Amino acid sequence: MHACAQGETFGSYMTTVAAHARQQGVSEATIRSTLSGLTPNQRVIELDTAQPGRSNTPPPMSGYLSRHLQPSLIARGRAKYQSLASILPGIERRFGVPASILFAIWGHETNYGGYTGDFDTARSLATLAWEGRRRDLFEGELIALMKMIDRGVPASQIKGSWAGAIGNPQFLPSVYLRLATDGDGNGTTDIFNSPADTIASIAHYFQDAGWRPGQPWGVRASVPAGLDPDRYATKLKAPSCERVHARHSQWKTVAEWRALGVQPRGYLADDVLASLFQPDGPGTNAYLLTGNYRVILQYNCSNYYALSVGLLADEIAR
Image (tube, rainbow, N blue to C red; front, side, top):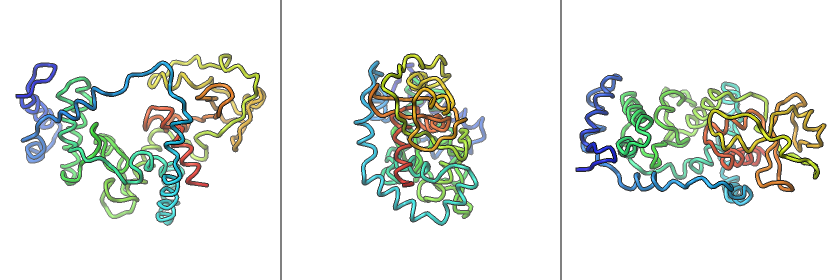
């Protein structure tokens, strides 16, 4: 028998999950086919408990960016962009998000579908829920996965990362249920095989998260040597991702930043609110970030991730 930290056997817990799924309208056939015969995946538990601790000194951004902005990733993104050129204007009009951002997310998440994960998602989510550290989250995702199967998504197709993210955009099942979108008009929503559905689904995610059409995620900026970043440190406490947002400055209009000698190196209207971000410290690359940068952070709450997505998008669109 497998016992988790709470002392509950895996089989006993799956009976509880089945009851909760039943209460939420999942069909008996799907409950049975998904949960019977499942066993915990020890590898998933190892990967979850081995998540890196948070250092007080973040590693340099420059090294991360050089690894995640490789010419091969940029070239593949441009090729994918060209191959889907006929459908992109419609998706951009529908959701208001530039296609280059959508491709940058797709490239970052799965190398444009090159690797989407081969963990059995039901088994991963069941393991993480049973393990118990974030039971509500993962039990909810396991039930959402069963609802996907009830909607007609083939169970054999639902494979992904060890933590339950699936398909080209690496959505959790609950995100799939809420935001996955038919991008090619064929009546199905296939984020596993359809590039059009993948791009439209990511666009729907960004629209839902508050993307402001017509505004970039940010631009590189020149900072005068005498500017003291501590004078402009944020005083806000972010409700989520606090450590990530704490590294950004106060919000000022672009006109106010110009008056302080900070010069955007791309177009930003004078009335746009922006925060200054110099991840590797004075004398290194600086950026003026708009509210759309925070939308990228909702996809993955990491400055390393969000900045590399923005820069990859700029390269794909170049």
